[in-house]
Amino acid sequence: MKKLTTLLLASTLLGGCSTISGWFADEEELKIRELKPIEMAFKPTVKWQASVGGGVEEYFSHLHPAVAYGKVFVASRDGAVRAFDPQSGKTLWRVQLDQDRHWGWMDWFNAQYPTAKVAGGIASAYDKIFIGTEDGIVYALNQADGSIAWQANVKGEVISTPAVDGGLVVVNTTSGHTLALDADSGEQKWDFESEVPPLSLRGVSSPVMASGGVLTGTANGKLAVVVAENGVLAWEQAVASPTGATELDRIADIDTKPLIIGGSVYVVSYDGTLAALDLRSGRIMWKREYASFQSLSYAGNNLFVVDTSSVVYALDRRNGIELWSQSGLRERGLTAAQTVADYVVVGDKWGFVHWLNQTDGKIVARLSLGGDDEDEGIYTAPVVDGNVFYTQTRDGQVYAVETP
Image (cartoon, rainbow, N blue to C red):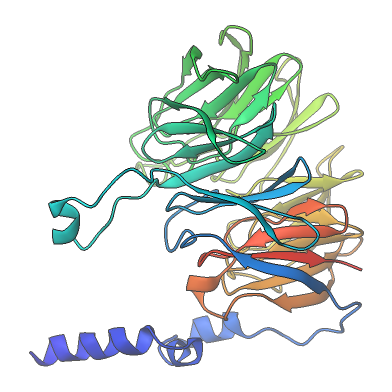
């Protein structure tokens, strides 16, 4: 009884303000949470703030905003989808996916309610936006009003962003299937299956379409390219080499979105391999030892990567030579880096956004958006549109932030 009382008391306190939750942090976490003072080079501006559904809560998610058709599209795990005016933040339309489902007696018993479990997206093309769910459903919504154009069932969870081009919507699922659907009807056109090892990360690579091919990273450390027209394998290259005595040691997932620049493609694996490959042949041009599950970004000849310890690096994309590293945000659960103006911007799990100088990696600005609590943290990379980027927090808050 004493143990139960103690647990209830702890639960009550942890549900309170972030300051109280800080009492329960160990010395190492408190050190990580303490941000060193910086000299602010400029003051970022929050243009507007809005909310969408219940957010993603503590669940793994690749949900992120999308900017297209003069709108900002945002979704939450519970199926709420919103379109906002990018200038004012005014809601232009809102829909609720899965709205016809009702509570069943088992839902009441488990104190749970059915949701759409939206996790993959958002992509936009052909006057539509495309979203995937953990239940293996792909939705196509009309961008003008959010009405459902079609929905299709696929093999496995859709927890990454679809790729849309050439009249196709391509999704990569957790079961190792890469499938192409007709963008107008949702009809399946082809299905390419890759091997999934017994143990892998919670996540899959978002596919990319380019030069008539579909590129995707696999759970066994390979980069695969299939012909977009028919799903036939064009080439496959092992980037990471699973090694170790246990399945845990052998995790070598490529969960990041392949980055295509000119005739080169860049990928990074969880086991510690960052590689540049020739897009046409799959030949590896160079390799370096960096481990990450966050997608890469670039500006000019600079390639930016956030590793598994939240250290940010800049490399010369032509040869892989390291230009600088920034370890001042280590273990803060950083998002992938994005470039805005002359800076690299990352969010962290305590709701802070950090601006780094592209030239030397120095932290030059900072902004707190969340409540300094992991339940309100930033979990997905900002989506940049000019000097403004859009980001969302785990509790469903959406922010438009301007960099001077």
